[in-house]
Length: 106
Image (cartoon, rainbow, N blue to C red; front, side, top):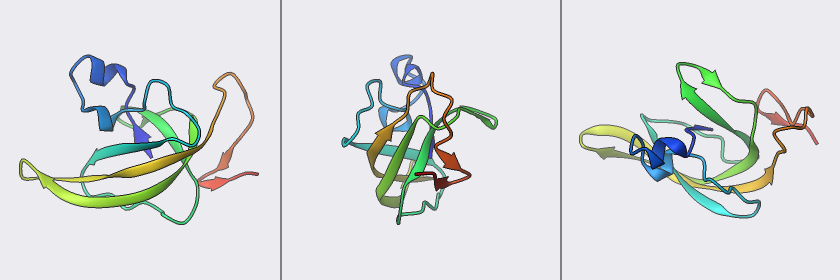
């Protein structure tokens, strides 16, 4: 799942749920919000990455499990909202590969 940097929320450009929490922690549950109808895999871990838009994506920052995802209309626009649980937070200075595509490497 790709979310924005928390700075986008602090600058008033995005809602908090559209951003990666500032102090993301293992075992914690967070809410997310994405514009558009999205389909997420619910049966295992997926990477949490940061997006700057236009396909500019970071390497995985954490491994998460999507707990729930719901489609809704906000101001007549489709959105997907839900909750995810952080399984593991990765050290950004580490060069270890954690995912092969969307498959977690143990």
